[in-house]
Length: 252
Image 1 (spheres, rainbow, N blue to C red):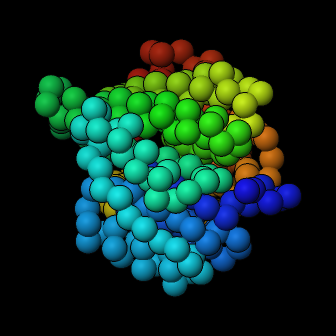
Image 2 (image 1 turned 180 degrees about the vertical axis):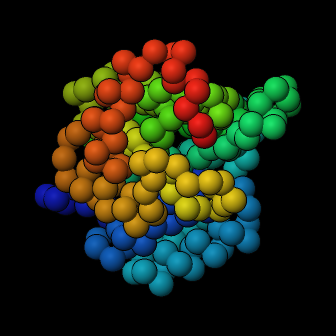
């Protein structure tokens, strides 16, 4: 069960090889997290992430494989994670594939980005919400993005997929009122990770450690949305009023 400060003792991480998820897991393991199930596609990277979680203090670490391009397997993967973990205090979703300008008119690549960033996560979250509702408690934390608030021209495929996931997660949280299950969306700026390696600096950037700190602070609240960095909330509120003719000229 979550303690009085919202800190979990058990967690399932969908996207367990993510640098951002890893930072969150390590920070939680330094506190009360003892059981963690890391789910992802790459076995070698899963083993590395598991070793890192154990070194940080997690006592029971297991891994589960899934492919985010196989939507039909999403519910099965979630069930396996929950069955391995036992009662799950926290589900952290950190799944997605970044698009790039040069492949955004490629139908195959677009399908991959949308499937891994929106379709698979939506199905997985639906099943996770059902499992937590059966428990009668739990916290779902979805790592979204600032680009979900106002989709930029330079990576509109990824941005639109994140926008869909963001909206779905907000709606899912509203639908779970009264069940004991809370959904939080973490809208974060670009952080230096394997996924963003080689990309230029971006405004309102953040770091994996800052994301971890924000997630932990968010767990102690019932806030529906957590912003990283916090100032992005006000910057994006103003960005909503920028005419599209000007917005499309903003460089990536």
